[in-house]
Image (tube, rainbow, N blue to C red):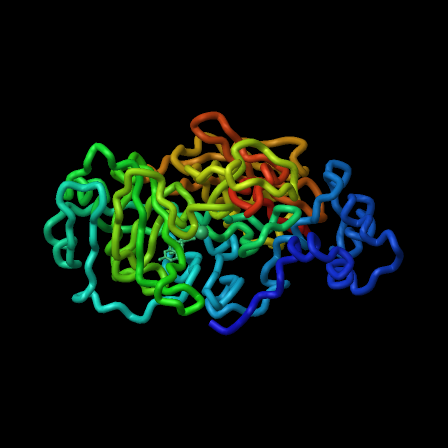
Length: 436
Ligand SMILES: Nc1nc2c(c(=O)[nH]1)N[C@H]1C(S)=C(S)[C@@H](COP(=O)(O)O)O[C@H]1N2
Ligand SMILES: [Mo]
């Protein structure tokens, strides 16, 4: 994977608004050109888009129009996987453009890839072992064949989302990949329940947490440094949906997704789901490997204002991801016909919970219409939602989508809860359409 992506426009606006204006508008016409971002430049925006904006009076000030903010194809170089967006190739970090998430089961080539270290060399499945040790009565060393033959298997569609999905929306932009919406996938995973493996080893009463280990080397090449080693509380690991996956979508797990075996702990930050798994260390305290301490995969215990430096002791490990949805059809920028209904659809998910309602808006959130949302085929799978939308007249529209979960929590319209590393942005996804 050699192609790089131009920085996302949101990121660019956060870091260097004048350069962003130059890129978008060609040149800066006056000192207050940035006024565009404060909602004052609607006339010039209409001119830029080549059309009118029927609901422009509802448009919140400071909002970067979706046409400019969310069109990776116009602002990125061609990625190797079609419309996949390559943030980095060392380590490999690739996300899907929203319309690639339209499949109910995400194919491997549309599933985001998040590596922290070097991709391991092809691993010999015959040599591979999984060690279970620590706070167990009987440590285990399992072969691939034993996992294939001596345990019950489950096949589940499971959402796996990077904790930093949506990071690009935070201002100031925290360090890390500027994921937009596509660091999420819902593949079909087959494997052995972690709970069955831990029961076979026999948990001691002191067992409270797991620590996960793997083959991938640290980027520095130092063999003594792990690239990442996270884990989860015993309750999450004993949940029957948390598995050691041996297959992805019915075949061997592709190397970039963790061949020959990985954890899938659905609904939690993807980093709990160790790829190229070699060991589960059962611990008598919260794990403290790379990715567990400091600011990594941790959020402030109490809300902080954007840009705050938060002391490490005021941070806590993230648990479940939160309610979110993506518009996967139409593709951003699609042409539709005024007065004629068109189908809008997508996926919705809510970490440990499920989605109970979906709504869409075409007037910048002034009014909302109910959409249908299907039940998940199994717990922790994402849910398909659909709506039929008609725009009243020609012009530029944004379609906004909002999910509500089983505990009554909805997606916010503005970016929520700034935190030092930019986790858990579940602001509404929006796309633009042009009505002719
Ligand atoms: N061994 C290992 N496991 C890992 C990672 C990694 O860098 N090394 N990245 C984690 C992170 S941060 C995420 S979001 C998921 C991504 O899984 P995917 O690449 O299959 O989408 O893998 C997790 N498991
Ligand atoms: Mo991640």
